[in-house]
Image (tube, rainbow, N blue to C red):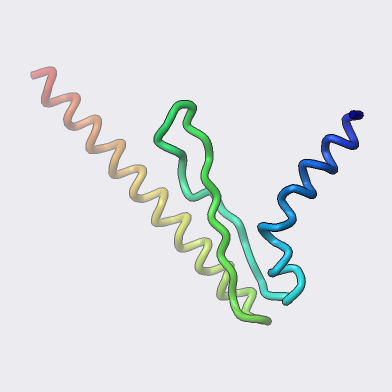
Length: 89
């Protein structure tokens, strides 16, 4: 298979995940929800879908989730550094 054919096949395999939103016209956004716990740590996506014509609500929700996710990640990093510093004492 050529590079183009492989690319198209990959895209077509994912249509089942989004076709219902494409048909209904609902606003949606997909964001990085974090990473898997196994090895390798793969990105995990989350799709948020809203009511028709409420695009701004979906975007605000996605933005709020990303801010919360980043705050939690910073807290976990800080907690790990504190534990590491306490162990070294």
